[in-house]
Image: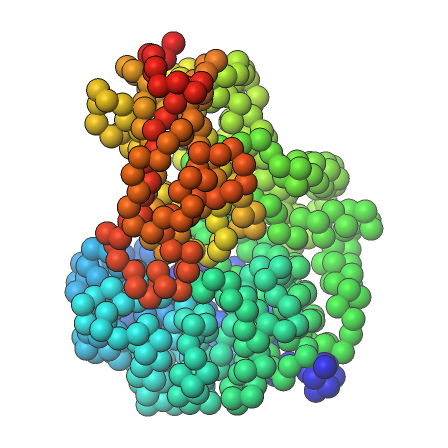
Length: 632
């Protein structure tokens, strides 16, 4: 049943986040963002900071890579003039690498070697440092609210002291301690709630009710009216909005500013509950987008939360009309299409394994065609528009679309290029390389325009690295004489199994050909393909070893090593170690699955051991024989 108050009146807190920790923005750009937020109905600006602000107690980061207290005061002044409350967010347990990467604070890590991103909650010196630093930060922000983070503390429980306690006890004790610290400054704390997803209701009930819960979920297919599926918990569904309401907690829903479908779905679910409001999260990966790209979804959330009584589809149509007044209905529909989540989100390094996933699926082929049509429609219009906000938004969205198209074309071309059974030309791949270079030049121009004075230019540097890696792959393609192809299975896309693949023959030691956490590119397909180019000399390998460690297990449906004119396939399982289920499945080229490690992500997260491995070895056979000749 829809909550009547939530449907009739603007939500009490309508917040938008600006991530300055991962990507700094200029003060003029922040001022423009503040004015935009005000125009679209927001009353709160959340500044995601981590350790980007240098203070007397934390002077260790370079001045050129951070903000000063005076910068923060200026931002507060601009926001206050626009009527926006400014809420700082400093992660106090996970995502602490701004602090723990500094030599002077390495001793605060959860584990010096294996958990560099986390504070150790069993180390009293952590809280001594946080008390000093946060006292300096809170003095800059008059708001009664303060966000202490607490998300994705995946390595919680590494150190010997922490290991004696449950992860839920550790995080709840940490929250209580941080609440006491912040209460001494008159602040009410907000927390991301994902580390409570495996906590019992009685454990959650230990938390004081003045804590504001901030549930985030960025995948619309994992949402429904009866609950949200979680992270690192086997995608277990819990009706957290109802639970928090019954326990007496205030809630801010937290959709993702790069995908309007997520904002629409989360808002529709929240309308059935009595929520405090919403927080539109925008994560500033430096190799991803400029601020104009996130403005459309930002505007939509502000409009939805300011007038919740109206039909969402009508609000969406009016938002696009207001943002893009120069476009005709067809062009606005093209913009709408670009604001939906793509099948292959490009955030992070574009190495060869991003592309080498076998042939395009039908869904991927349709996505590539959609991106090409949209790019054609908007590309013809862009040069006709005067420079301004509308131009900047379309230019940013088009740059994203062009990258998606190039990546999609490389997904088509590269798997065939490294397959020794085929004789493919590198011409199309070289053309994609030239298009990446052109896009890198555009990104450099955008950087100078939107982030003048901020160095280094991560956006074009990211593309230049990708071009360099692609060039290296194309140069070595002629030397590749084998392609290892695996069909993998992953039932929980938030798990993080690390897969190691080794080959050998009787005349040589094991040779590692792959090691990494490889997931489906769209985070949805349970069965997916990994291709590994191999340069093999000497006698053909007669053994394959597959090992899995990390958070959650990995399913392996089949493996084959292809040479020109012949292939090696597993014929007999010779050894298995650790947790191995249905080992014989690897011998069959069908949909059955051999599973290495625990299928229970919760168990592996709670009882993680760096050296815990599950592995399987199998004998390889050529055309049903064991006479393995040298590759041609």
